[in-house]
Image 1 (cartoon, rainbow, N blue to C red):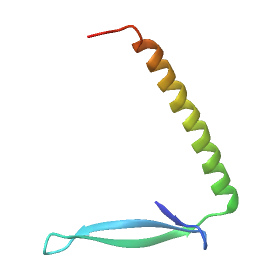
Image 2: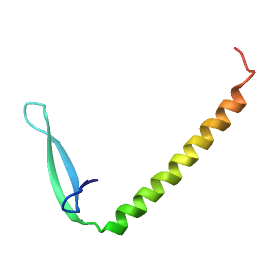
Image 3: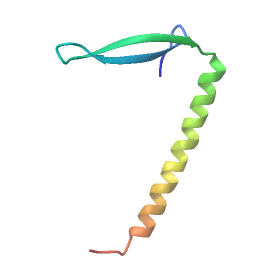
Length: 68
């Protein structure tokens, strides 16, 4: 899924291989998004980032002192 920030439209991209073997991309408009949708996605992204950072810290703590 891709968004067009200026118009708030949502697109899917269909990918096909043409006869010469090259990939062709065709955008398909699937709707529009609201400002609230973007804010929710940004909030979810921040939560996921914090979880990733927490996981990385846990991994570093567990791997300290271990040598192969």
